[in-house]
Length: 133
Image (cartoon, rainbow, N blue to C red):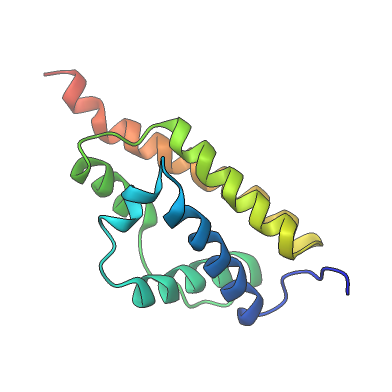
């Protein structure tokens, strides 16, 4: 059976779960997630809401992921670098390619690229006052 496109919440859930299985095991970025997320089932639901909103335009997600990631960077001693977002993106692309193909899968790739740049820039901007001291 061939791969299909992302078409519903079940597909988004599969994508998010398979992706975070990889991320949590990654020796370079896993600890950022494993040391800070205490409620994985709740967090996964929030992530599924986020991607369902972004890909299928189902208005479920409420939150500010850019602010959350800037706060996370502060908690981990300002150790998150662009390099880490590259690893995150690689896992995202591999997970998409393993399970899906089609316009929404491509949209998921483009949105992840855009999100990773915006998040890293927000982290960088949040650090700027540190550099001025």
